[in-house]
Structure formats: structure tokens, C-alpha cells
Image (tube, rainbow, N blue to C red):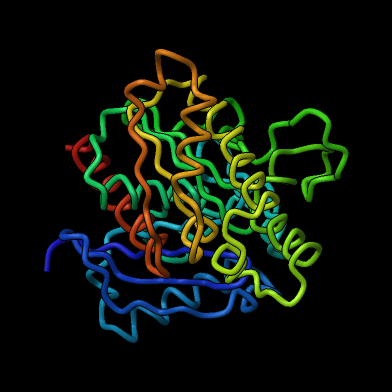
Length: 306
């Protein structure tokens, strides 16, 4: 059967779990509500859920490691969850250590967007030694930095918060508490506000399809290019990956976004040879990314110990 890992993707709404084999295949995928963590000890709840999952599928003695992705600020050493705005009970916990103790398995913790980029790197067959940026436009604006073969965390583990860089002449307050963050305008949350204001009666999932080329929507799409091109200009990546639910809404004008990114990217480089890839995700993308990352880290640890 080879090396099996468990991949876990915790979101504000759903808790997803699956077994990932060494060929990258996901088995026994499950999706449950994240509300199971609302009451009581979140580590104990997680341990109970993972143990129950392994017992149901008979893999308790076959799993070598667990990867956990969470929409949080995670410490530089990837052991502590510092802040999780959209989930209760996940702040200031030495989560990886506590879960390892309960499961007797190595636990690899990171931001969920990093594991989405891990999924994209593997699925798109990108060179893992290169610099790769991931931009994820969903409810918010997610960002992952993979620089010369590893995820970049920064001094405190807070690197890659592209949704919270300040933009000029924006006075709205962000959910993080700051004023004028890019996520205020560059997010699915803002698109929903635009839809309610300018297109009453239109479902947000249909807004690009029913109102193609509308100036309000074209401005929204072009504004997405501002933070994306900013980071591209700073880091001069080998690849930029664009993903997220907004970019895969029916009728979304990808060519308009691409044109705006190229317009704002510095000339001649990085604009002239910029490689941009779109990646469509599904419910299992974060599970695969976390499971694959756990496998890579486990194998690396085994190699060092020999």
C-alpha cells in the first residue's frame, strides 16, 4: 500500500479529510461541518475525529503523518495557531504538538492557502525548485509564497497576507481591523456587495454571465490585478497561479484580468516572460495539498534520521 498520509482542510464552513497515497490519489474523502469545533477543546475534538476516521477505514496502523491546513495566522515554526478570525477556539494554541501527542503521529500544520498552492504545484507539474506565487480569490483574498523550493513564512509566520496590504484612497474597514486593505475591494465579499447594490435580483454566481462587460464588473476585475501585479513586481516569480471560486464563476473575464496584470507588471521584466497558470479547485484540493505536504515532510525527516 506504500506511504499513506491524512490530509485535513479546515474552513470556516467545512471540515474536509481524506487519505492520500504515494501516487497522489485521495481515498475515503469526507466533508463535515466545521461547527463540530464550536464547543469544547478543539484539539480533543480533532483527535477524536481523526481517530474515528482511521478506524472507519481500517488505516490506523498504515498512516505515517497528518497534514492540517487552516485559515489562520500560523507561527513561523508551524506548531502554533496564532489567530483564526472565522473559527472559534483556534487562537493561541500549540496545536501541532498537542495533536501529535494525542494521535502518536507527526502533524504538519500550515495556512490553508499554502496547501492549496502545494496542490497546484503538484497538479500543474511545476518545477518545485522555482519561485511560485499563489493568488486565491474566494470570499477573501488568499496568497501563498513558495520561494526557491519552500514556503516563505517571514519573521512571525505572517508573510503572504496580500489581502491586507493597504491601498490608497480606500476608507472602508477590513475584517482584520485595519483601514483600506486590498481585500476590502479585491474579494468575493466585495463582489457580493456590488451585486446587491448594482444588480438586485441577480444571484452572485450569475453576475458575470448576466452582466458581461458591465463597467462596474470590469473595474472590479481590473482592481484584482493591482495586488497581484504588485507582488509579481516585487518577487519576479517563475510562475503565478490564479485560482479561487470568483475566478471560476461562469462568465468571469479571465482575459481582462490577464491583460490588466500584464499592463501593471514592470517592463521588460517580469512582464515579458511572465508565466501565469489558472487552477480550478474542488472540495479535495486542500486535502490533497496537506496530505502531499505531510508525505514530503515525513520522508525528509526519515532521510535526516538515517
